[in-house]
Length: 262
Length: 262
DNA sequence: AAGTGGTCTAGACCACCCG
DNA sequence: GGGTGGTCTAGACCACTTT
Image (cartoon, rainbow over all chains, first blue to last red; front, side):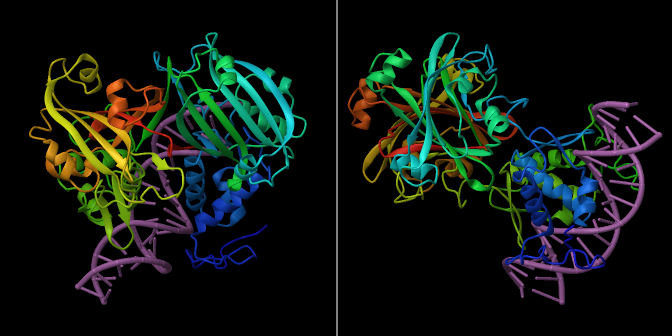
C-alpha cells in the first residue's frame, strides 16, 4: 500500500509523491484527495456505496484522520461524496439523491417545490449519427466520430415544456436505446450511472433567448413567435471529461430558470 | 468581553450562550461565526479592511485558533470575507474584487474574459416613487412605501445589450441621483457600499425568455419580435434582508448567460 | 525577524445511527 | 456499545508577506 509521509516523526513535510514525483508543492490533504478521487473514478466504490471510514483511510494513507477529513470535506463540497453523520461517507449518485434532477434549474412559478407531479417523458427519436464539427468540439471528439443523438419532450401536468436534443459519445454509450431513455424512472443521469457506469459530476450551461424553428414550435405546440429559453449544457465526468451535450428549449410561461448567486 | 466556554478544561461542551440562551444545539464555531457576522453587519470592520487575526479573535472569544478558523472558513466560502495568506482576512467588497461584476453572468460569446472594454452606462431616469404591490413584496416593504426606481442601459462596444430597471428601498438609499448611478466607475454595488453602507451579499435570479414591449425595443434598438432574456434579481444584504429588485432584459445575440452546475 | 494564514498531528469528547 | 462522522483543543511547523 502506498504510504505518503516519509517520516512520521516530522509531520507536515512539504510533499512526497507515491512514486511518481509531485512536481509543484501541494498539501498532503490535496494528495489524499487526489488518491480518493482516483479510487472514485476507477470504480473502487460504486455510486451509492459507502467509502471506507475516515479512520480506515487515515490508516491506509498513513496520515492523521484530520487530514483525510479535510480531503473528504472538499470532495463533499464538490458533490462527489455525501456525508451522513453516524453512518458513513457515500459516493454521490443522481439516483436516491434528495435533490432529484440536480442539474435541472427550471422551476414552476407557483409552489416552491419543483416536484408537483414529475415530468412525463416522450422520446421522439434516438439514433447513431456522426458528430458534426460543433458537437465534436463540445464532446472533445473528432469530427465524424460516432455519437448517439436523441430528442425528447418533457411535459409538466400534460403541458409540453422542454424540448431536448442530447448528444452522447457513441463509444461510452454503445447500445443506448430510445426505450431505455423513455422507460427509466428517475433522472436520466441515474440511468447513465447504472447502465453505462458514467457519472456526471458537474456541468456548464449557456443560456439565451431564442425563437423556435417551425419543427420545434410544432413539437412544443407553441406559436412560431414564442420566445423560448435556449439552454446548452455540457456535462462532465471525473477529470473534466465532457460526456454529454444537451440543447434544451424551455417554455417559460409558467416556469422559470432559477439561479442563486453569491 | 463575552467569553463562550464555561469550562476550559472540558472542551467541546455542547453549547453555552453569551448570556442569552442558545436554544438548539449549535457547534461553537457556528456561534463564533455568528458573532463575527454580527460585527460585520454592524460595520465594526468596513469593506476592504482587515478583520483581526485568527489569534486575536481566538483570544477575544476564548476559543482555540482552529475553531475561529473553521468559522472564518465558512464566511470565506460565502464570499463574506476574503483570506490572503501572509496578509490577513479582509471584509469582502464589490470594489477592488478580482471578479468585478460578481453578479453579472452575461458573457460575450467570444473571448473568455468578460472584460473586453467595460460596459458603457446610460441612465435613462431615476426617480422616487411609491412601491407597487409586487415591488413591495420583493423588497419586504409595504405597498406605497417610498422606493427609488431607476432605468438604465448598458452597452458593450457601443451596442445596447442590457436594459435594467432597478428598485431600491427609499429609506436606505435616500438621496441617490441619476448622476451618481451614471458617473461612478466600477460596479454599482461598490457604490452602494461606499455611499450608502449597503453591502449586497447574495442574490437570487429568475430567468425567462420574453419579447420586449415597444418602448423596451426602442431603447435597446431591436426589432419588436426579438427574443430577450428576462432576468429578475433580488439582492440581499446581511441577514437575508432584500435590498434591491432588478429586472434586466439581456440581448443574447452576441452574449450568453453562463452558469456552472455542480 | 515577526506576523498572518495554511497544514498537520494526536487525542479527547459529542452527536447520531444501528444492532 | 461500538462505529461513524463532527467538534474542539494545543502545539508544531510551513508558506507567504511585510518590516
